[in-house]
Length: 296
Image 1 (tube, rainbow, N blue to C red):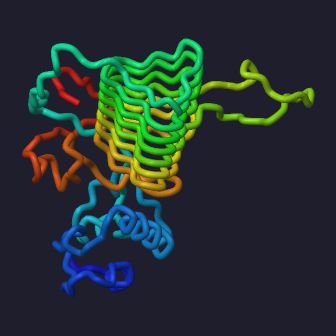
Image 2 (image 1 turned 30 degrees about the vertical axis):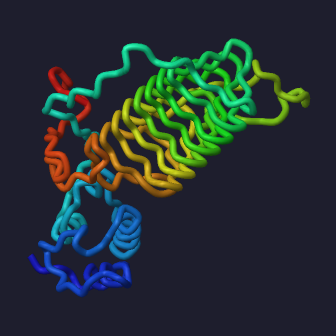
């Protein structure tokens, strides 16, 4: 395979200025070229504009070398989008044993807990955090300064929500990380007043809660729009705007988000189906296949 001149020109223009000089060949790895997740989105957008094509996110996520990208823009290429996810085939590592008895929850004096809000043992709620009425929080969680959890929010155990994250009604599963400034909203049709012109009351909102699966990470400043589901161990890059469901172990970035790769449970980007950091192994499957005996 010979790389098209226009493709190599686009890649050369978008490579980071600090990247080491390399000869571009079909076997050139995108990682070796210094192209990160956002660079891949820029590449895809440039190819789509230059060649008048649409690159499905599934194909973009599985492109690891320049030859993979060249095959997507070939005149005779026919890429059929398929909903794919990764599932683990190794047993999950045994977690460290929990203390026999967790300490009582700590709530900083400047934090505000609404009526009926509950915080599980071992959890810590820091300065100026606000938990609205009826919020439920599991054990061993940490909430940073200025965190807001709206009514109806449910948080599992061992969750970390960092400074200034705002969660308006969501189901947050165990071991999730919400980085600083994350915004999760739940109303797809927000208005300040009703059709009759009076201020909206709580019962006038249309809740469509977000679900964040076990072990997922939502990067700083990311926005999750109403009703979407983030799969287990997915990673949403900083500043992303997520407007549709994200598969388990997916790496997504951009506004609107695009699926640009896969990540391991340990958070490392996967070059294939085996993690080069921890050795965990995965299988690809389409979403209409049964998940029996798979480990997410």
